[in-house]
Image 1: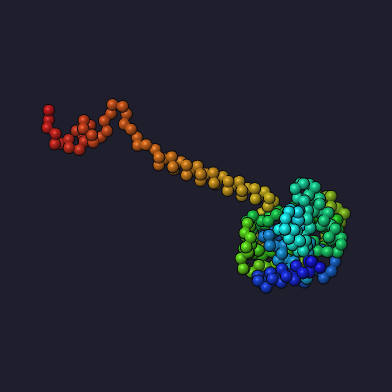
Image 2: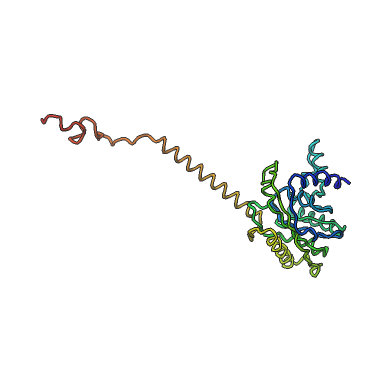
Length: 279
């Protein structure tokens, strides 16, 4: 009931304001379970995708969204519950991943649509990164549900990372044909099968999105970018300090006993030497 009200208000508002275009809507089943595997460009991805679908989509979200204190915290929790987010404590490493997988399996086994971002985090630069096999592969193989690849287009331009207020640009959504991995059902502990399933889904997402593919995890790319930015700032700071030190240096002094050129007694080459009488 809350989801319906949120979809009517927020979803309708998003469609009216941003007019997202959609291709392949017929690939979403009218009923029954499915896993929606999407690239991840922006925080707004989890709002634009549900806005264009008739059915409820459930994602997992960090537990902090549901446990913040005060009136603002309660309103935030109500909002995320209303838009179909499930709280998962992501601070516990392996345990957090297991909780997210369990939540996804429960949604799918209940006949719902489970939304997941195989990259595990937002792309730091708009490129498509290697999918993490644990979540997507295990939910797919534990349930036998079809995996539907989805490409979000230009949502990072609508709401760039770190920006709260979105820009009024038109994003797009491409929905691919369902992928059937039921032949591997029950093999969710085989890491080679998990990797193969995930890579196949990421390949389909790449074709739909047109993104450049990078065969490393997005978390690694983010760390590399952060380290490069840190090194660049350090180099700029060092260069600025060196320039400041050079500008503050005192003029060079002549050695003891020497006379600077142009001063009396400096020799016949100084200014006015030709005017001095010979001894």
